[in-house]
Amino acid sequence: MFNERKALQMTLQALLEQRMVLRRQYVDQDKQLGADIKQILTRIREMDGQEGIVDTDFAEEAATAAEDIPIELMKRMKIRKAHIRHDYVEVAKHIENLLREYQTPMSLVELCEELRNRHHVEFASPYIGVQKSLKYLPHVKIEKDGRKLIFSL
Image (spheres, rainbow, N blue to C red):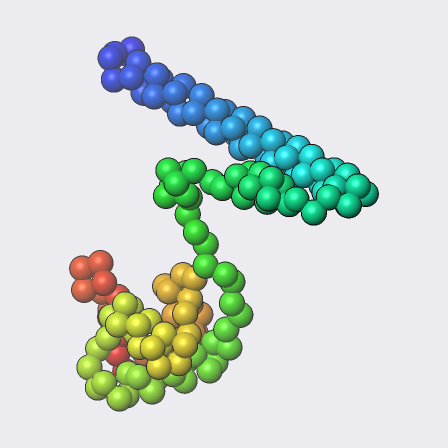
């Protein structure tokens, strides 16, 4: 049963594959050009050093131009938070203290905000960080309110 929907799906799949190939090609070319630029700048600096030339304005301009990433590309790039090792036993104690102090159920967002403000604990992935901490708190109840997770004692 070959219909228009199937044809559109096949076309979409082909376009997505072509897009991925172009992205990989672009990234590879960009990396190669960056390496070539750095190599040339290094050579220019070596030659200037040998001749005693102190005019580094050109080299600095070229280096900053080589390192500049277009604004449109920066907007699309995801910025990852640095990986920080946490003492989940300690974080679990903080969570338990917060839940005792507030005496009301707290959402994941509220819990993470309090952890960040009071104890400077920030997770790259709040859900995973809190889940790892809750392994040490089996008495904490986890409920769902729609799409929100609610934690209580």
